[in-house]
Length: 299
Ligand SMILES: [Fe+2]
Image (cartoon, rainbow, N blue to C red; front, top):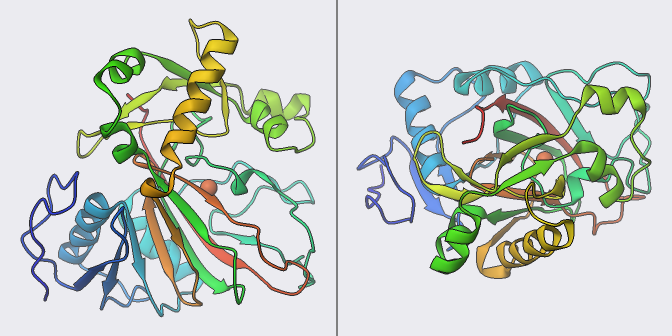
């Protein structure tokens, strides 16, 4: 059992003096590897709470060499709240199942040589266009490319902390409208249909959100950005572009290189993320089994 120094990572609000597992940081910016638990098996309350505390402290936690069926991943995820239904639809129009795959394979197993759904490959926080966005996302590496295809993270808490007092006072009370429809255009997807617009209306959230558990502040942005209410369009666009450029600089980033068996779990309230499509999709499968936990209304 490794002793973890309380408050060693910025934002540690409730880190226990020790965890019931070994834990190692995986970058200076964020992220820790948790060594020991077999997540295919039920975990007790103490383990559940310790994993959550580690997540709050490090924002991203990684478990290596896991082997979980869909049901086992669903059971593990369910420790942390209600599983979220995916908003998207399969090609046949049906809803995605709650435990779904990010995959470049067709249902028949063929590799698709180009991106089918571009949105996940641009910076975002999951479901920011919902009134109640996602709290925690978990991806389990089933098949991963030999190189490339990372999942990249930007630490929005740290990016906020280092802003000048002037910038903080400028943005602290601003709102951002997040729009699935606008995102389709921003990322180069086919425009939303009328039905999709009705299903996913634009949503207004604070530009700076307060973490519902730790009380820390973080920028809340992403490519679902549509506009800043109360500012002229050009001014709001320029402000958000400046903050996005700031927050995605290397000093705020951790890029996760996938191994088969990884379970990566992250806190959407503190981070943005995106997938990298710099891998050979025609030859390399990238299949990540996903579960998402519903969050709370940002404030
Ligand atoms: Fe995502």
